[in-house]
Amino acid sequence: MEKDANQLRIHIINMLTESGSGHPGGSLSAADLLTYLYFKEMSIDSEDKDHPNRDRFILSKGHAAPALYGILAMKGFFNSSELKNLRKMGSFLQGHPDMRKVPGVDMSTGSLGQGFSASIGVALGGKIDEKSYRVYTLLGDGELQEGIVWEAAMAASHYKLDNLVAIIDNNGLQIDGTNDEVMKVNPLKDKWESFGWRVVEIDGHCFQDIERGFVIAKQTKGQPTAIIAKTSKGKGVSFMENKVCWHGATPSEAERVQAVQELEANLC
Amino acid sequence: MSIATRESYGNILVELGEENKNIVVLDADLSKSTKTAGFAKKFPKRFINAGIAEQNLMGMAAGLATTGKIPFASTFAVFATGRAFEIIRNSICYPNLNVKIAATHAGLTVGEDGGSHQSIEDIAIMRSLPNMSIIVPADDVETKQAVRAAVDIDGPVYIRLGRLGVPAIFDNNYTFTFGKGNLLKDGQDITIIGMGIMTSKCIQAAERLEKDGIHARVINISTVKPIDEEIIIKAAKESDCIITVEEHSVIGGLGSAVCDVVSMFQPVKVIKIGVNDKFGESGNPEELLVKYGLTIENIYHTAKQAIKDNA
Image 1 (tube, chains in turn red, blue):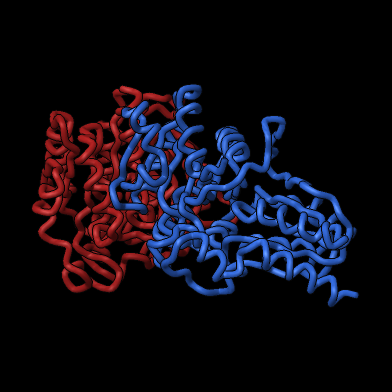
Image 2 (cartoon, each protein chain N blue to C red):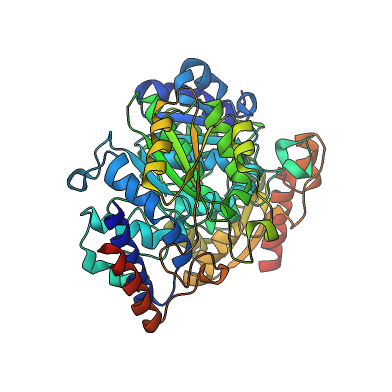
């Protein structure tokens, strides 16, 4: 899976250099989590993308679209040759995921907090129909500043949605600075627990730890699970790691070359 | 016998819930007022209370729609369209999800709760959203048919309902047609276009005008978006002046929609009767309608004056 995650990171870097706009930092921090979800955890099939009992994934932090597009291409939902058209006019790979355009996308997102809110509805749908599918949603930590997140968290716990797992990509940074500088969100574990969620804290870049989180989530009954993943924004690219400025700036060709070299070195 | 359109909604929802197992209903702690409580009692597993959290109400409705459910999301119009606007925009309209927003307590006739609760802008806001259809039924019969029709529309629908009882306009021979206005009375001297609770007042004003020898055309617009351009253009062509009447701001609602049509295709003078860019206030519904000029009297006098001015 390390190899797959690395390949995903290469896709992210390449597509963002080509597009000239987008969000590398938050896409890279989520790469390992997405790799685990799509290659190990979720029951999905690119040949049967509308299966009513498929697991669902909602990228609530929709700006990490490059990561989602990369992983969907790797899983065969569409040809990876399409990735270079990210954000281009007429491309189905819009700046933020569009469920009407991209096969494999379960909900359109981009406006923070709303994907998470929708995930409550998706999980409720599963409970109403007594289906066994699981719902996974990835949020940013800055995203937790949105009020709707807490409305949704309250509802998920009230409705005992143990078929729902929220993963928080806790890289500690946002646009105007660190979370602590802009608007403190910690303590995360306490917050989610007080809202009635089972909380697991993991290293978002260690597959063994990621697995531990999802195993606990699967075993948890009567309440939803929040996996707080400690991550590094820009992970995998030395000059991007933990830097606020790489939230929404894209690499130059020279930077792309360096980044890909670093990532390819990891593939050996 | 008058019955509020929110009441009609509550009743038809139970019927539809029986016929279509995919219908789910969501509310935000107002089910006794919105009348979704009837559905909640009959189908508790398909009723979701969001609590006092209108943004999440709409977000959950969107998510449910992605699983093949037909969600009816209800709360007061002011909160549905205001508080949750961007969720309706980005989670419902942008992905074109099959959510029906049945908002009650629209307009001034909310009454005593006052200005903070009286939505005079909900239609203006909803009109601005691509993929959103807007239905404002005028009576019990029309509400039941319109809500049923909304189930068959593939995409977002906003249904505007009221707190106040309205007299019957249509009988059981009526067929609601989405996107089509109703010619309730023909006439060539002036056209009066009404919506929602104001439609029956337009009819009564026209009857008074008839006694004065003025033949007014009366049209009911129940689908504000997409609006029936044909019936409006025909009226503009054949009657020289249009009065629009709505329990809504004169900015962005029925009157503005009619102005859009006529100014593009058949320019005529349009006089808008509605809330004149003011917030509402506490009062009983009837006295509020009087204070804000939403009366048979005002429609009648406005029409007479318009004809005098035109002569």
